[in-house]
Length: 429
Ligand code: GKR
Ligand code: MG
Image (cartoon, rainbow, N blue to C red; front, side, top):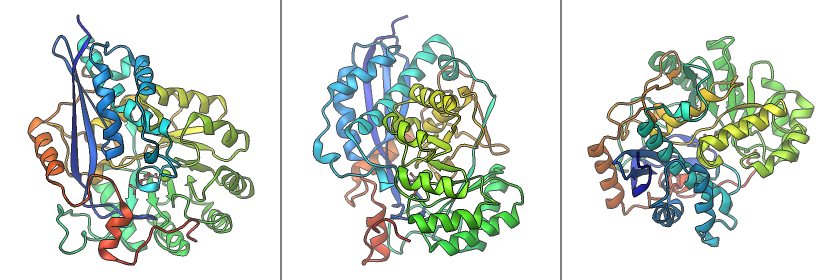
C-alpha cells in the first residue's frame, strides 16, 4: 500500500444560501466553500471541506503544494506544514472570523481552519485505503447515530428583488408565529426535537416572545437562543432571567469572558459559546471563571476532528459540556462532524448544523436526518462520494462571480435591501 500524496486538488465553489438573518446582516445568495481532494500514489482520493473565502484559499494553495510526497497517515505533520505557510498579516489584523460571528480572527485560527479541510481529506483517503470508516481511525464510535438540533433562523421569504439566487420553500419567519411555523417544518421534514434560534436580529423582547412561543408549541423540548454577543450585560441578565425556565442553554448572549462569567454567576442559566472559547488558549480563563458551561466545538476552526476530540477531553476534565457549532456547510463537513461526534463520550446536547438550509451539495447522495439524527456511516472513509458534475457546476459559478460573493459579507448583503445598513457596533441592545 502506498499512502504517499501525489496530487492535491482545491476546488472553490459557490453554494446557494437562503436569506437567513443574523446580527451582522443577512446571508448572501451564494456562499463560498472550498472542496479539498488528496490523491495517493495508489489512486485513492480523499475529500475534505472548509471555508472558501479568499483568505482561506490564499493559505490552502501553498499548503497543498507542500503536501505532495507526504503520507496521508501523517496527520500530525499537517500542523507542521501549517506553521510553514505564511499568513498575510493584513488578513487577520483587527479582523473577525467569517461573518464576524466566530470570535476574533488570528493567524493560527486561519491556519487551523485550513488544516481541518486537509485533515478530513487525509482521514477519508486513509480510511478508504485501509477499508475503515473515519470514526474507526478516530478510536471508534460510541454511538450509532448523532443527534442534531433544528437551527431556526429569522428569515425573509426570498432574497431582495433583482438579486440572482435560488428559490427556497421555507417561507418567511420574522415573528414568533413564523419561527414556530419554521420549527414545525423542521420537525416534519427531519424529525428534530431540539431547537436553536439564531437571535440578535430583533429587539430582545421580540426574541423572548419567539422562544416563549416555541416553548408553548413544543413543551419540554430543549431550546436555545444565540444572539452572537449582541446584548449588553444588563440585557443578557434580563433575557436569562426571563427565559431561564425554558432554556437548555443561552448561547453567547454577550461578548467577552468576564461578562459571560457574570451572566453565568448571577443567573445560573447554562451558557454555551462558539465565540469566547474558540482556541485552546482561551480555555483556561473561561473555565476557571465559570464563564461557559458548554463549549461548541467546530472541527473547522479547532483544526480538525482530532483537535475536536482533544477539546472534548479538556471539557470533560473540567466538567464542562461539549456540543457542536456550525456555519454554512455541505455534506462532506456533515459527514466529518458526524464521525467525530460519534467518538465523543459525553455528548449530551444535540449538535448544530446548517445542512437543512443547503439545497445544493457536491455529493452523489445527500446525508439524511431521521428522527433528527444522522446515522454514523460505516463505509470506508467518510462514507460519501463526490459528484464531479455538481462540483464543476458550483465551481463554474465561483469562476463566473463578479458580484463580490467570493468572501462572505452579511452586512453587504443587507445593504442591498437597506442601503443605510452598517455592521452594528456591539452591544447592539
Ligand atoms: O450562519 O448566520 C449564521 C450564524 O450566525 C453563524 O455564522 C454562526 O457562526 O451559527 C453560528 C453560531 O452559532 O454562532
Ligand atoms: Mg453561536
